Picture 1: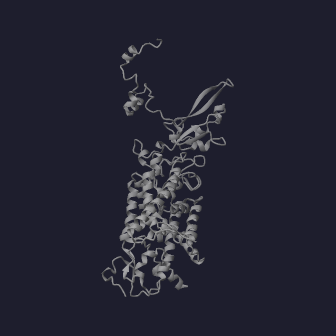
Picture 2: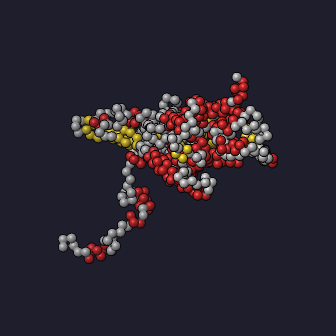
Length: 275
Length: 282
């Protein structure tokens, strides 16, 4: 039992973080607990610190209006938190949609659904990110905020779901039947935005090629396989791609201790290629 | 089953790394973006034009409100805390409610704005979609009476007061009694000995809180809130109350074209055209 817990320690921690964040928001709305009020678009931490989604604020700017200071400060705090330290951790540790898509992926794996009729490149999300900003300029409103299934799910959990569950189910079915890791890995412009801003963030998973036995367990489990090129290329290096969600599934799956938490420049000096 | 690969072309074998492939990919993806963009834009454009939505106090003009609102629900939480779980009006629009998804609104017939004196819903707004500055009074305090959420409109055919039945429910319910809703006294010609006590809304004071709509006795309310821009007409600069010096100010904002309309006749001096164009009976 304890070995199973150990094997899934980061996945458990991620679920706990995701769920407790949602619970804090629900408690704030239902019982007035002033820990974390609002929702992921914009919130107030401990009744003082404003927090805002930098992508939402960027869309508002693209729409051609100026937000007031609170949202600006909040967006800056979140932006630097992820850009400097946490990387794309939002996607794996905070986003409620991650629970839905991970479940879809797990069922997909269990049912061995491996037919892919549609192949969409992972770069599609950057196109959708660009499209979001262009549409925001043209329409004068934040374009992704109008349709975001993430917001619909998250708002639904806090303020009442209504028919929002249909849209969440659509994402679930898309990931389950149409395309593996379809929403988070291919479509979501928020994920694309987070990938871009976390290009230079500090906290990274480090790969030690000397310990690696090339079992490829990490590549099998990683939701963004392309970031693990250091494993297939047998390089001692941190995983430097911004598309890595810091979910640490590779760390917990690795039997050889080749994947470890660390900083981005740990192995910079000894980038040796093993033969 | 052949797979549909987005952004690639299998008919001609081009090296996936070649420059030509790269540009081809950009070309195809741009095309896809246009298609998705059109669908996306039409949905957004539809959903931001649900005109009959009553916004919280302090909301700026609807277009700017929709652009600025980040849909965080802090106003809703403040409202719920102030009013209590049962009667709080504000809610965030859900899908299929025919409102802009996620933006706050209220339905006065369900729960009107209860006009909290300290206006708890406006200060938490992080983006300025709800603007405190619209609500400050002369003493520099937030004043809910300065809010303009909408305007009460009376349907004189279904309002029983216009039948001659005495009902002053909306008048009594109005937080700005005798200002926003006043009673007019008129002679009831049908009976010859009774009076009509009919409600009248004054747009100068009505905040659009909707308590009148909530309290109205008819099955479907005969007095109801509409967004001010829909409830009211607009005069434009061509009609001015000449006896009101304040109203004359509007003329200053008008374009010169409106102030001095140019027609074939007005090109000439009035004296000239009266003399030259001949008389009407000629």
